[in-house]
Image (cartoon, rainbow, N blue to C red; front, side):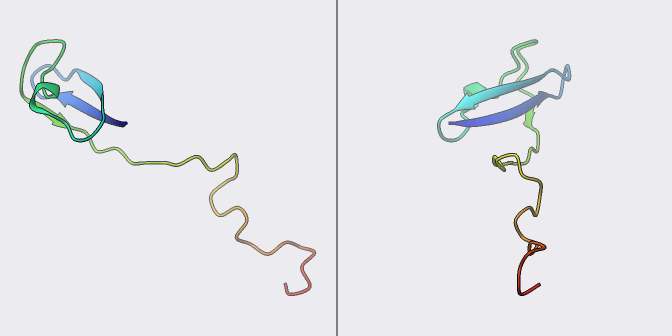
Length: 67
């Protein structure tokens, strides 16, 4: 299931739509004012890193005979 972040150009209301597949025309209606002047906000996808920081596990450990 995908999550889409949308914003209304008319009243600036931000809302989220959950949909399996692509957005449909009926998803692009502002629930606050009913306007169809809605655009999708850019959002990035982040996966679960399992509690490790970016790059964790990439550096050789201090006890390595090679590093």
